[in-house]
Length: 328
Image (cartoon, rainbow, N blue to C red):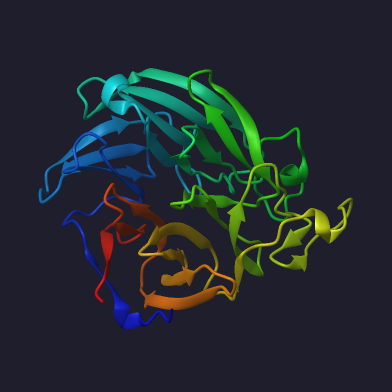
């Protein structure tokens, strides 16, 4: 299948400008209601075709905001209709990243007084916090964590089995227990699951290669030993056969600088880059095919997917949200 630029288009989905948006979610109990996570600490909600906005949860008094810090992700409990639970991940004012559960009091908004801290970890530096939350098809909650920051993973967290940093964690939200699902990741900012239940992760590179990884339980994805397919720092590393290689890489060339993992749409994995604003489509198969879909002027912070499978682009600096549409 050859992807052509003319096969897809995008348009502004909502006539609302947000402050540093990082994620869009649709209510699991009202298809007309959406939520936008703003990095500064607020979760805002609105109805489709309305410009009236309400604050569903304000954590700005608990969130340290700036650079890669802030309110980073949110996920609805699969049983939200009955229990009213949501989960959020944020960087707090004591330099911990925190996974917490909150409860809704009206099916729309959430009380911050109901916060239940499930997990937190001290961040040695202020960058590479990872930051995505998503329930998998197995009912577990997955959280991506970066290597703790600075440059080159100086503490070698990603390869340390005793550190949660540089890992994908899998939580049982009934017991609040977790396990390391996969490791050897640098800064897995966004991930998603395909229709087969496979996890696709966009792992932000150091300064040479941006990666798309197909992540499986128990496997090691190589950082800091490898960046992309190349050696980075192989001190104390095993031979290359012990590490998983990316399914796709592209060059960090100054224009492209930070991969944003996306979602599948019409059989195509759609992902992009924060700096260049480019959006690509990847067609899986024996031979991976990747083609440019759009060359935007956005700073893409995330892609999102609604209940019907529609895909959205989140423009971090511009503040608007755009919907992708296949036109033929």
